[in-house]
Length: 333
Length: 302
Image (spheres, one colour):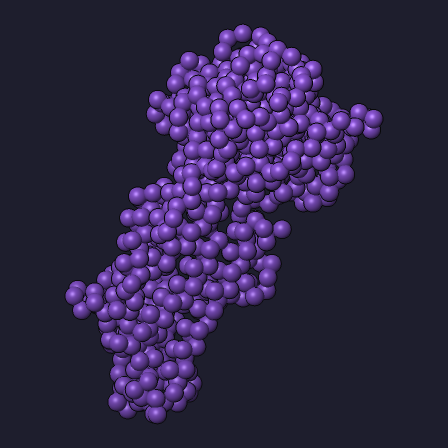
């Protein structure tokens, strides 16, 4: 598998740019020194709490916002060095599915207009008839009757709208899709359908995938690899099997224990994290997770733990990360 | 993935019911809006009627609007002069009919021009942001500092009160209002997820502006246009009243009222008729503006 996307030390700091008088709001480090690779046809899931910078990361990858540091290489080309025109041309190869199925479809336009928008932008629709045929094909692909194409978004349910959004994203046959919490706004009963749909499509079309989610349960079905984010940083990353069977970062373990399980007996050892997520404008010294970490020791407030490889392809940023999973570790003193 | 339809069956049923009537095309929908509300229908008929009157003024007017007659000054309404005569013995009805040309052209021309330029400036400022926004906004602020009447008097004094000068003045005077509204609406619409979706889909900036921004800010612009059409007729009347609008002896609704005012105690018909004509047209345009706003707003257009 060749590398499609290579993220190198990516970071984004939002600063207060208003012209108001008075003190400026402190800068927010939404994403900090994030590096990873996405291979062709691979699905990488990014998991983390609200505000951990996962959506910002998705937008950085698509160059919807500009990075403050680091760079994104798409097919070995540095996106930060590209002109606006080149970026726009590149959008044909990378698309996005949005979190909000209501806001992300213009209420004014028909389903056909919405789905054909990317194709129209790149001149991929030759005639009206050709356009309608392609839209019908896409609607069929996402499990909606082609006869719906002349309706407007307000006539559809959340799940149906998300299908429309997915049809729009795959219309130009992209190599890479960012799905920003595509199911978090949907009913649980619909979530599984949408996830299955995206998986089916990924198998059929072979695109790479960045799947953003806030719980590990959703990700389990989609991802090949999982990255766990906390306060703008990746704290653990590995294959799905590695992350789920042997988490090495205490935050990952806490997230896993928070995922609802159908078996009541299995719920007993849930880890409850104390306190709130610190503000990304005032990140704790050393390890950002130390304020809530059950393992926190002195070294954690002094030194930031680097991402170390605990086993091949599995990295974790914790001073206590060893080749042994947390469960087998004795609490640090 | 075919089992999707069963699980979403209930939602689909709702959608199905709502969608029984096929989504109307733009023209049908517009006709529907005009015809649906009796008030809008009447307003539409009134405006069309006044436009026809203005176009066919020479054929409709029973008398020459400029012909004076010392023998027939300040007459009350009669079969010969339906609205009586003024202090020069001119037929008020004929003057009103001919005056509609000037008044309507002023009423419609400047707001349309101003809406065009104002929207252009406002959308550019709102969408681009940054330094472009600051420059445009300051220019707009500067223009806004001038009361439109003062601006009109200034230009009229400098260049003379010709027809096109007044149109230009009113356009310049109205533009900042449109620009402000367009800018604020653009900044709001720009935050909508579907605009980001369009950017992510690879849509070019001009296309985003014309497809996603402009249609979504059209509603307030149209209302403003109706509002300013009304004001425009009124300001033309004021300018004529002050003697820098339509030049006598040519009639406009404004200077009919002005002439009538100085002669109020001899006959009230010119003031009453001119005022009524302005009121009716302004009201009709406002009603149409409101309906078009509702039509353009997808939230109320259910």
